[in-house]
Length: 102
Image (cartoon, rainbow, N blue to C red; front, side, top):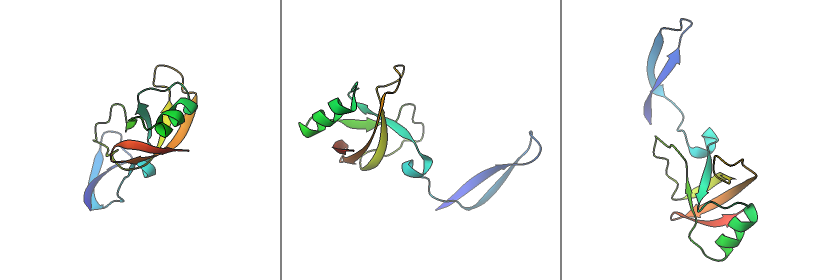
């Protein structure tokens, strides 16, 4: 995929714009952490909801790049901000719904 890269030079006021091949950035490579909806207070509550077949989805707050969270494996943390994050999980998402929690 052809993309333009921006590289900062030694001068703080000058940017060098180059074109060329850049690696495809994915959610896994960027290390993006996300949340689940609804907001579960514990990982145990999340696991129980998924096992019970409840609809649980994944989202990235303030996502200005439109990350595709409909399929894949993602890192999740909870509960949502402004509460302190107390649990972390890896989830598998199929067709927009969480199907596995580890």
